[in-house]
Length: 269
Image (tube, rainbow, N blue to C red; front, side, top):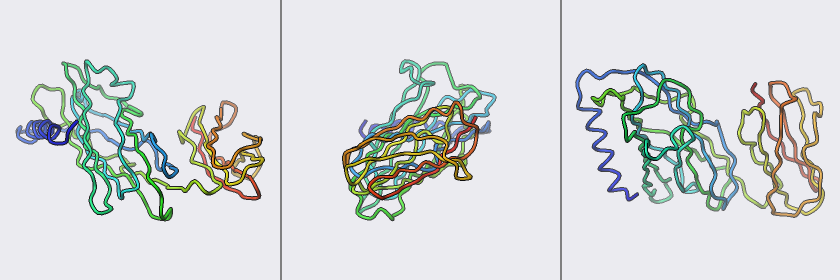
């Protein structure tokens, strides 16, 4: 949707929320579903989940917010609804992207509202929305890149447009770890924390045998997740089922061509 068209809708919702006396605050929190993600340069379609914890006694009818990228390495591709709001006849999801200037990051403006006399009841909604981003070339992997939530506006399904009082959750900022494709490295598993399954992606700099092994917090090897010959520069994916593992932190390590990389993961049951 064009930004100017979407702005008209936003202004209408904003007027409805801010020009009604005696606003009723119910409460809730919008946050990223992850603390951080790992992204390879020139990769596309990386999913970033947004979670909602809604505590209102009256249903939630509308939600508007911005997501701001800290620099131009991240480009917003699209926003898609989660399973709970996937019925397009009931829920309308609109978004627009305002390009950043002079190396500054883009801003995604997102609007979700109910088309009918329905609403979201109190509850926890994991991946209510998913924001998909693309990563451009990475000139300096040490540069900190973040996505930040801003300017949340919400509306109750009370027929008067009163504010639902949705604010920022504990994860209002997401760290994006940018990685160049020339290195032997692991990506952060997704989802994380998880139960019972998660996926691990990796690539290597030199063709040859590669292993991915899983260790517990005291350094004992729990499992070999991958052991095979791989091609340089190609992405590989490993799926882990933790049904037989206890809750807690684990480490997984990639070894290939005499090089190592390791990351942490959390099993939450």
